[in-house]
Image 1 (tube, helix red, strand yellow):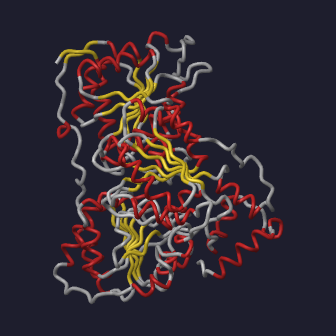
Image 2: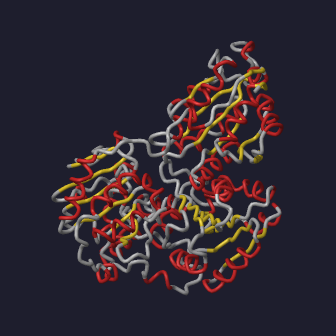
Image 3: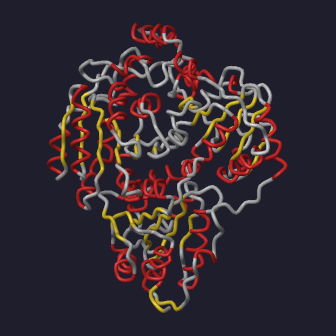
Length: 590
C-alpha cells in the first residue's frame, strides 16, 4: 500500500488490536493523529496531562493484555510521561511510547521544543533509554516499519515492558509504498520458549514429596489467573498458596489453601506460615523484593529447597539461593508441572483453617468497628461485601495500599491493579480510566488516598469527557497518611509538609460533571456504593476515615530502617511509638 509513514504506523497499531491512543496532541505529532483519524478505528483519548496518558496506557495494557499506547509531543510531552513509563518498566507492562520530534533538517538549530540532545536540548531517546526495553529515533522513512516491528516484538516478547520511538514530524508525512506484515510474520507467540523437561520433573518430585511445602505467586504469574491452573495445582498438591502484593487476587483469597499476601503489609497468616519451617518453597514470577520478603528475611529460606520459576533469568537466585531455577513462562511451566503430577497419587487433604482462624484471616476486630470517623479496615470489608466479585480494583499508594493488601479480600475474577514497583502516588487514579477501557464488562473502582487523588485527579475529567464509568473511593484524612505516621513514630511528632488542606471532593466531582457523594458512617458505605454502581458513569466517593488509625506495625518493618533512612531508635522514641510497639507485641505481629 502507498501512504504516509504515519498512516503505515497507525495501521500496524490497529492490526495489533490497539483500540485507544492516550495522550495530548502537539504540533509535532499532528500527522500521526491525523493518520489515526483518517485510516484506522483507533480512538484517541485526550488526557489532561501526558503523565495521565502514560498511566492510562499502563492500566489499559495491564487489564487487557494488549499493547498500551501513549503519545506525546516532542520535549515537554516526553518529559511529562517519564513516571508512567518508569512504572510500566518496573512492573513489566507492555507499552509503546511514541514521542514527536522536530523535523530532521532542524536538528541542532534550536528548533522549538527540540529534544535531540544537541546543545542544551534534552535527548529524549536517552531520557527513555534506562526506563524502557528499547528507545530509538526513526531517522529515515525506509526504516520506519522495521523499527516499529522491532519495538512491538521487543515490548511483547520475553519479559514484557515499554518501548519508546521518537518520530520526527517531517518523516511522519513522507510517503512510502509497502505491504503491512501480519504480526505472526514478525514476532513469536506469547509462550514460545521450550521448557527444560528434566527440571520440571525434578520440581514435581520435590514439591510432591515435601512435608511442609508452600507456593509464593508473583505478578509474573498473573496470566495464570485466567485459566485456573494455580488452583488446580494447589489442590492437586494440597499446597498452601501466598501471593506477593502486586499479585493479590491471582489466587482466590477465599480458597481454603489461600494464605493471602506475603508482605510487610500483608496478612498475618501468610507472614507467619511462610517463615515457619517450610521445607520446599515454590516461587513463581516474583523477584522477592524488599517489601515482599520482609527485608530479605533469612527465615524465608526453606530447609530443603527453594524453587524459582521466572521468565527473566536475571531474577533467578537474585535475593535467595535456589536449588532449582527454571527460566520459563509461568503459565507454560505450571501447566507442564501439573501434567507431570497427574501420574502421582492425589495428596491427602491439608486443613489450615484453624491456623488461619488463629491469625484472624480477613476477620480482624477493626473490620467490624462501628466507630466514626470510619476505620479504614471497616471500609475495606464493606467495599468487599458490596462490590461484585469481578470488580477491577485499582489501588493507589501510601497507607491505602496497605489497607487493601491486608483487609480487602480479592479474587481472580476481579483483577487487582497495584502499581507497586515504582510505587508512584496517583498512578491508579489515572490508570483506572485506561483499565476500564481495557475491560468494559466489569466494574472499575479506584481506592486512593486524598494525597493520591490530588496528584492526578484532573483525569476524572477525561472519564467525564468520554463517559467512562469509574468509581473513585477517596480515603480522606487530610494528610499524607504514610508520611504523617512515620513522622509521628520516628520523628517524635514533628510533622513537616504532610498535612493537606480540607478539600471538598464532592464539590470537585460536581464541578467536573461527575457525581459526588460523601460517606461519614459505616452504614452509609454499602447503599452509597450501590448507588454509584447504578449511575454507570464517573463517580467520586469521599469517605471520611479515622485520621489517627495506623496500619499495624510489623516487627520485620524495623528491617527497613536503614533502607528508608530513619533515625536511630533512641533518637526517635516517643509515646506514640511505644504505644504502637506494645500493640504489635499484643497482636503478635511478625
